[in-house]
Image (cartoon, rainbow, N blue to C red; front, side):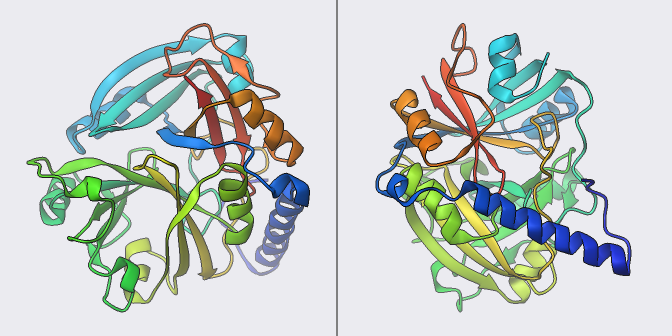
Length: 355
């Protein structure tokens, strides 16, 4: 299937029908036996990294260092059959860079070979099921926004938005959405006193503090909970219904009505958030031929204690595996020695890792 914007009448209807069928098939194909959901297959201890594929590593490093104050802490190239198996990409050579902000790590991956990854589609909106963003916490939204404007970032939101008092769980939080040079979606977050993780309220003189979460668009919150809560052991840490003009301007999506559910491991931040768009309709599914080479590919690294037991439990539950089985790497250059990549019900990639 293609990611080009839909054109007219009959083509629109046909694609909408196909999108619905693909989403339904993904859910049906994944649905686990009831017995498999009685206990978590894997107890995720923490989110080690949030990462995605980039087209030009030097350009991405410059953006995250100069604009957002990340620090490069690791830079390596990886090749060989073990990594091919892990990523599901044959004959690959990749450059992997770890960027640190506060205590959290962003992982950037550029495929040197094969070099034919597809760009993020234009237009791409937050109700499309390939959507994912990471949220960067700031100590001062006005100063952070001034820095972004000075660097000419591509804005999704026209200006920072303040969540209204009517949305009690999120009232007073300030947010702003924008894109990096490859069109990956990013969000700035400012938490007033009493909101957000206490971690973000420690005294500091820095503007950009760290990564609060990665947010993924899902087709069905309950189905996603079966995967992240019931199988991976994450716990619900917050819920809200975001709607109205503030949400529309934040997302750049008219008539946005979003059910937000946060799920967190034992140690957070960061955590995972689900975005289920009740409106508008028409969000497009994850392309079924997506691979790690494509620029809309994100992968979140989840640390587990026993990866073999996790793999066995996830397989019994009918989870889709990118990696046929647990892969052992020659060294821990990437921050782990054993790993496995699986897909959630909507096709978002999760990489289970064991140090």
